[in-house]
Length: 377
Image (cartoon, rainbow, N blue to C red; front, side, top):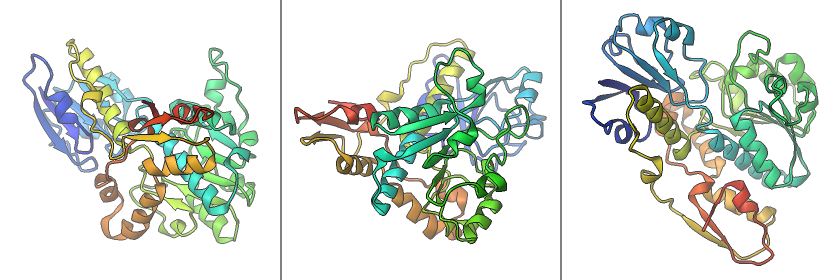
């Protein structure tokens, strides 16, 4: 069995070389450079979001039986074509949802410190109530931060009992955080969801966070808004036209990064594990490898909290695990020399809150750290 996998899929060799009873050949590839010739005789193709999987790539391959993307988004996959070819397809929904939620929380902690505002007094509008939006809402709830979710697709689902709000209501919140896929047409398109008209209606005091797909915001309209002197604070992890970036927009951001919000070690590796489990099911074997046996200990693996939890403690805990300013600095300094994809490829190991055990030694201390995702001792 020949398995092609994206070189940025952590632990791919550990997972897929151990397929019981299968003689496997593992070959890695650079995600944006995969050619039809390389994919010619693959039995299994495992990609990330920068690889377009369609008829152009696969028309010469007559062996392929399984395609997987180790990502939440699937807009780079021609699922209709795969179905026509009877090729099994799996994605990794929710694999990096925690990572993205922790990126957003790190950004909010940094901005609260920078502008001296109380996080708990903010209202947060979450656009997209799927895996990522849900994980973010759970962390906001742990901190007592009020939020509203807009997701018309889920609002139509009678089995989802959450309260949903209109986009117009959500766009009135102090913070707007975008967590939707790129959908160009259909009943609920998200392409340029924040167009010139909606951007111009935002208030000077608001914070806009985009960590989903770059095309959800009209980047040129956003640049024009900021050039006009509008005070909207921007946290941008995704960019229209990636890997090309509207570089003049970077100067108007509070935090700018290279589409790495979901790039925690756990987030990326969880995607690999989910595809491993799906492939095992596809070829009818029992999975024997588990992610928890592969993850290394964090550099700081335990903390004892001996004081009442407050915003200062939150600031310290979050930045100890992930300080988004590091990624912002690297992006600003190295984008022109390395390029967008190179920054993602060379991204350093970053852990999630769960990699750190927090012991609560102070009797009156709340369990907020554990509700945020830090592990219990």
